[in-house]
Image (cartoon, rainbow over all chains, first blue to last red; front, side, top):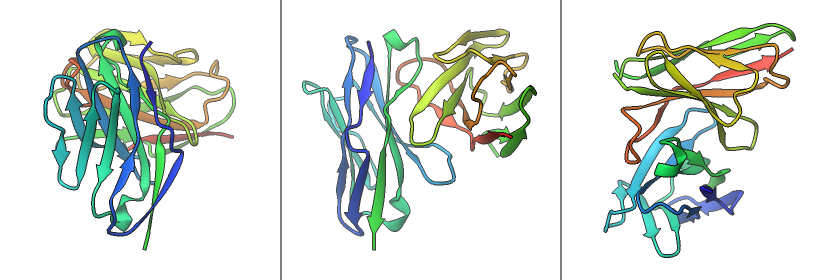
Length: 115
Length: 114
């Protein structure tokens, strides 16, 4: 069965430093997509970055990059130069053929950026 | 202005009442979804719809109902059969249901049962 695991319930990072949020996934499909979302205290889910299973390069979007290690089934989010506004919940999610097109979410990591 | 709107932002319900949460989109996306989020938890899928007049149950559909009469609209009714409806409800859309398609979310409705 498809599964997303985020093992860090909470993380702290100093402002301007980089931080890595862990995500491992389980799927038997060869074709799948991995997504990261940010959820600030307001509640809205904000899409950050996408990585496809066939993408040879790691995805990057501004200060966000995805460290994709296919053999280890990990898709860690790296945030460079952390800002106070990065404090939020972060969710890793996956979609594959077996999930009927639906996203499967991890339980999230709460990131707190310290000034 | 393109996007997904949900209303109301906050909703209070007395026990035994049905309430309807609104979700509207002008992105021309085919697929729409409803999720429930409990404090400190991830998202759980309630219902989804791929096309107008068609919808399927997700993982926690009991006590909920939906309709999809228009492409733009996917309202969720929380019925009195839902034993613990206090939660944050998020609506989402995707252009279609391929594994590369990004899912976009509305701002959410926070439902509290009094």
